[in-house]
Picture (cartoon, one colour):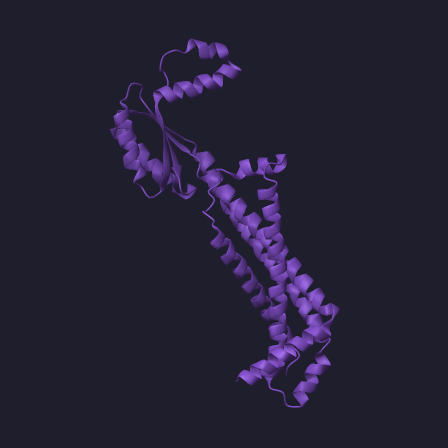
Length: 307
């Protein structure tokens, strides 16, 4: 068994050496394909985080009558925060509401800001949901509370805005998934054509091996291992380039104007906690995925020439 495997590896290495420029072409095609795929996956992931940040903004506001005790408001806040659909509730006291209003008006309309001295603005709760899909359910809960709670002055939300955001984000995600799927199909087909061309150049060699009684596994295995090698090396190159570019841009040059703007712009997104071990796992996973894709491409291509 070991001797048989050793012969396959030896044959694979010979095929790689004999391929010459075709080997480098295959590696570069795989590297380019994985580079494009990884870039699009990163863009899709960041776009999804950006959509989530908009989706999770407070869309439901509960205003209380002026003079309501803070204890009553915070008690209601604590009760609603126990609901699974609610991510966060932002409390704004009467004093904070007045301060925020005067700060905003002092720039555009200073006379209005000067004339407001008393707390005439109500306390409020801004409800942020995990998903916009749960908005109607939470609105019903809050509206029911308003009917029995005299402390609540008004429940403010825009049903039209909620419906628009829900519909827009649904179709954006559907469209993004379709584009991503088409991209992966194009990349797979593109790499498959490269493998097909490489296999076509050896069609006569494959026929001879069949004539002399070579087993299907012995004929296929070197091509599969060769494709896995090209895929692994291509993925290794593309992943390394992306890691290096990311480090240089966002670590070495993080104080540059454009880079600093991008970092600040996306800083409020809900990024998962990444550690060095996570990057290592992702890197190894990409390299392994490259091997699998290369092996599958070779398997599909070689099946056409073995009867």
